Image 1 (cartoon, rainbow, N blue to C red):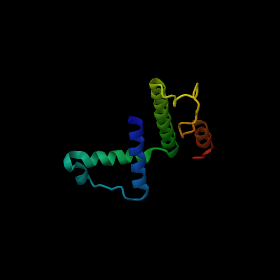
Image 2: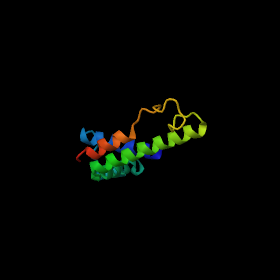
Image 3: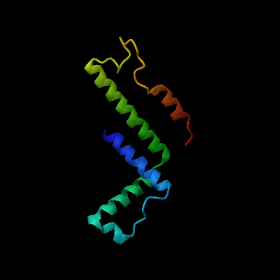
Image 4: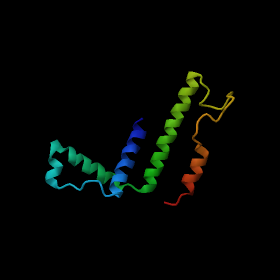
Length: 109
């Protein structure tokens, strides 16, 4: 959950920055509201300095980790949706990790 929420925050800030809706704050505004706006500005600077390839890779790893946990929990519960061993319908998850790896590796950042 932490990794997915972190990447959701990064992508949200990235969308606001590219659409020029992310606020540019002055020094007086950064110390207002007990420094909360200053923290927002520092998070925006942190996202702005990240490379797009790194953001995409971290997003991919977060989604893979989430599906790994989902499959593990389903296997522990006995639902049989996590692993295709002994399952009548192995395609219970709509996410195909093998195809995504090829798509991510084929992208030129």
